[in-house]
Amino acid sequence: QVQLVESGGGLVQAGGSLQLSCAASGSIFSTHHMGWYRQAPGKQRDLVASITTNGFTNYADSVKGRFTISRDNAKKTVYLQMNSLKPEDTAAYYCNAKFYAGTWYDYWGQGTQVTVSS
Image 1 (cartoon, rainbow, N blue to C red):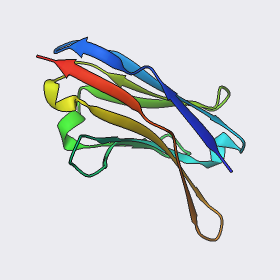
Image 2 (image 1 turned 60 degrees about the vertical axis):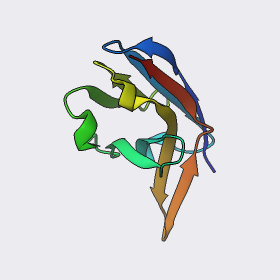
Image 3 (image 1 turned 90 degrees about the vertical axis):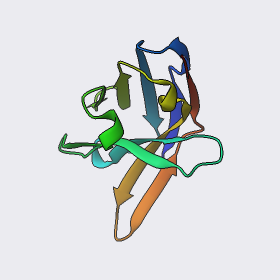
Image 4 (image 1 turned 30 degrees about the vertical axis):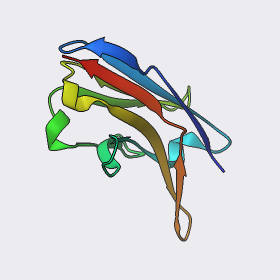
């Protein structure tokens, strides 16, 4: 079982930056692939960025070059550095952890709101 707690969301002007953090507890963090997803009102939840246990990263095309995902296994924390924010980045951001043990286990945080004003 994994518990995930996001923080760092807020209101920022377009062009600004925010860093989201996701603190994990309850399991061996280093064995979990981690990701950030976002969901705007009325839209589906989409992958923003992911990082594997080996540190390989993947980004949605819309955030490439602006967002950076990283992880600190010692602190059991995954980060999302968001630069050059745009109004269209406004959404609830969710932390996700995936773990394979014969089947995939999927865990979600409660979400943190990011609002970018124009």
